[in-house]
Image (cartoon, rainbow, N blue to C red; front, side, top):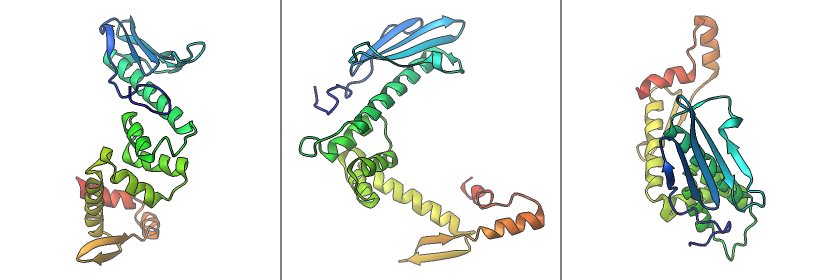
Length: 208
């Protein structure tokens, strides 16, 4: 088992056993996930922490007003809750930098479903480092290879589109580097035209 600060093997896939159309169970990283067909299309699901003394119930469909229709939806919700639970435990567990490296933290966060942006935020809060450094640590990690290019391309595309209707545009090396919108115009135009000609209503059609 790969070592992590929680001493739980959450690197393995969640595998459900039993009848997926009726009653099934998954044991994963010290947790037990259950899903059971109750009535018509309504399903019940629950997640337990088997590492606690009383096998604590983490969450269940009983805590929600909505009904979970179908086994697939119920299993996916149980898996989501299980990963969020372990991610929160990972974030709140004190760490020794000599034992638990930042690169390991980034890997574990991704396994537990964190996005690059969420990983940057959690790095900043947990290790008290600057956001720009967090950005480099995440984008330069083996876990998010290629994510920097995707992010930068998306940002550039937004700038290029926004430049068509921006009040001020700045360029560096022939590329749009900054756009500025005078949002007070929206208020003035709304009063004059009595419509919702806001910044977002102006820019949304550009992405269709």
